Image (cartoon, rainbow, N blue to C red):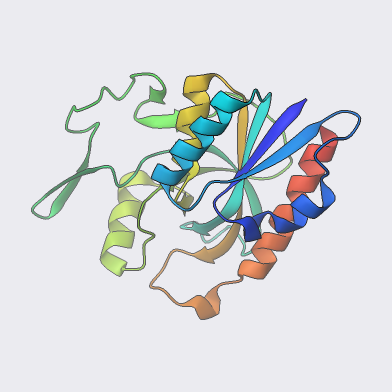
Length: 211
């Protein structure tokens, strides 16, 4: 099996890169650092998939949590994602492109405006819903708006791009994220990025060694 691991930054997957050699008896694991955000990720992943054939794609990174039941450092399996800030402001209201009928909410690869991972993989970790944004939230008003509108567990800056490309290219995929912080007014003193990265890499190694 040939696996591609995608991450926005090298530091998020550096430990796993040192352990997972490009080839072993059963699998070959390649790594792609896509850059932060949907635009860079969509381009870099699309280019890589058209250059090389892969059996499986794993998106690995850190995330902010809307859900207080998720612990800092906890690794989760994202089963659905959305392009949350692709929309229209109208005075004090915000509408998605689906709500304004620019795209049918069930036009492939979307399902009720969401991107759903059809690969039912049991990883023995919590399954969560995500939103993907170009600007992470750190303002009480926007946080509350997006929490109420999307009711998602986590937010990232790349997840939906991975879903979108892999669904269109018909490549099995997985998104795992480790919680580095809660989505609140920005206070890095409450963050624990080193713990999130450590747990993320341990889980990534565990998953790939089982495949």
